[in-house]
Length: 196
Picture 1: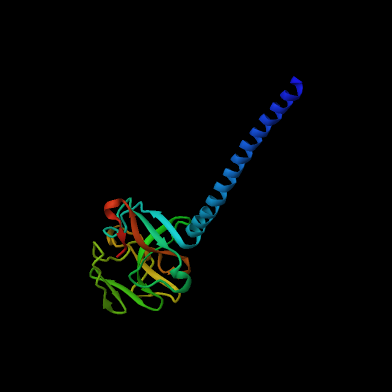
Picture 2: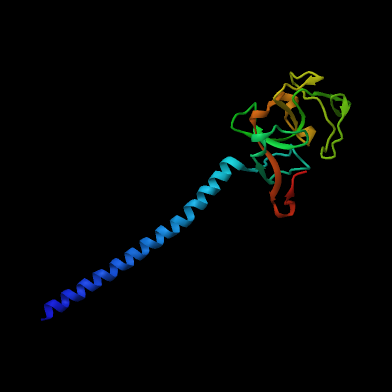
């Protein structure tokens, strides 16, 4: 008579472990079902719509400082070309796999000139409240002035003109190489705000 009771207790104990295991499995599946779609959305946004960058140089000061973390949105340039005044990211023409951040100062078909520390586009001086230095011609550059920007390209310059390697050295940047439009600084906290 003891034998059947023992067998019954053993069976109930094994059923209890099975219920715990199935509850754990169900919890893991439920968590994965909730988290996986969110991760896929985050990855898709990161790859297709948003770029996050940390700026290592002073070439865009005072607009963007060394160590600032910025957000670039990638959707605008899927439907239109970059415009003068926008801050953009693009792959360096001189160092592949390096992303640069510069300001578009002219677009395809426009004429760029630099004279007496002033930037001219289509013969008109450009008012640049964001630039911390006067414009200068790139030394050791093969770019000649006045320069007509090729169609489908942009002319980019850093806001810190004395400390920026930009179109004055490497020339036009194909608009197709522009990866995002910088829209805001998100770090450090005291510098959080939209790009101007």
